[in-house]
Image 1: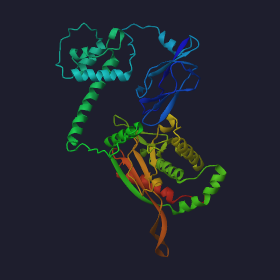
Image 2 (image 1 turned 90 degrees about the vertical axis):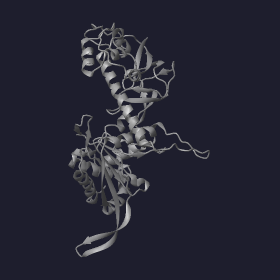
Image 3 (image 1 turned 60 degrees about the horizontal axis):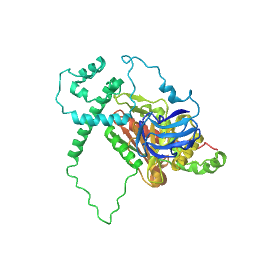
Amino acid sequence: MGKHLLKLPKMGESVAEATLSAWLKDVGDPIAIDESVVEVSTDKVDSDIPSEVEGVLLEKKFEVNEIAQIGDVIAVIEVEGNDDSPIEKEEFIIPQPVIEVESTPEENPVEIIEAEVSSIQETIQAPSISSNNSNRFYSPLVRNIAKEEGISIAELETIKGSGDKGRVTKKDMLTHLESVTKVKEINENQQVYSKNHMDIQPIVVSEQDQIIEMTRMGKMISDHMVMSRKISAHVQSFVEVDVTDLWEWRERVKKRFQEQEQQKLTFTPIFIFAVAKALKEYPLLNSSVDVDSRIIQKKAINIGMATALGDGNLIVPVIKNTDHLNLVGLARAVNELSKRARENKLQPDEVQDGTYTVTNVGNFGSITGIPIINQPQVGILAIGVIRKMPAVIETVNGDFIGIRRKMMLCHSYDHRIINGAMGGQFVKAVSDALEQWDTSIDF
């Protein structure tokens, strides 16, 4: 009998970990190919992890509510055969000389980091010891890193080695340095938080008050929004749009559209069509800012649409290559993604790789809203409710007051790379696309 390692698969470029929500199989249960074994949750979506092989669940590596990193082994499945199982291939790797190849740690990376943070907190105030008297072997590479980073022998002794016989490797050094940085950031954040919240008094809870625990997704959304406000310099531009002609056109064609395409024609795909057109005109809005301040201008236009769930939370399914779709294709994509979002059936890749986001706050009757940028994007558009309003209508025979259908657009953008002129021109381009809609289109 062989063994297959079921690993946590990659779930998008911005997803590094996931929480195990529920085991769908118990140890000893048979598993079919493509049968779901465990449910996991990320800050973007809940998903099932299927098995790539047929066999029996032999071991669970994580408990419910524990966090696993991408690539971690989360379960071991016993399979038929010996030679073709992935675990045996890994076990029979030809050993290399210790001096040339560093061993890969077997511990969970999360446990290593937690252990390092703990050890750093205990030794970070330790006096620097320049003596080289140590019974522990350190390679020249490790010693050079220690010298460059100012790490003393005493601090080296505290680092847990993952190499042969506990030898400290380059990866251990980098993990240690990363942990030191994290500890410093945590301490600094705690100091800032304490300073900014000195006057905040504890909330008094009476017997009549109801205490509601935030859901895991709610906490993730909260953290994501707070993080976005800290990272990006948010600024907004507002535009009022006259969509009277667009409204009347949709009223005229929506019945034929549904009969012909078997899809409802809502305003959402129309709005997204206009946004995609504007992004092609202003491609810098279709960008991300890298950690080292590089601007990554994306070639693909992947527009995310914020979708409200039944429990009050929000999810953002992504329409890939939006600019390649016509109105029919957009209507189909919007309807299908919205339906699967509300049924909690979205796949991980359907909520990833977005380059710009649209949120229709008008669905809830809001005149407008000031949205928070969905990191690592640099822009998001909030679309308000369409209302009948009195307006001045200009004609060759003079001006007069009439009833028009209007709505507000609020464009939030990252002022680190998008200036006010471009931010305003972009949302004006969206407005123009809607006001100048080709009402001769028929179905």
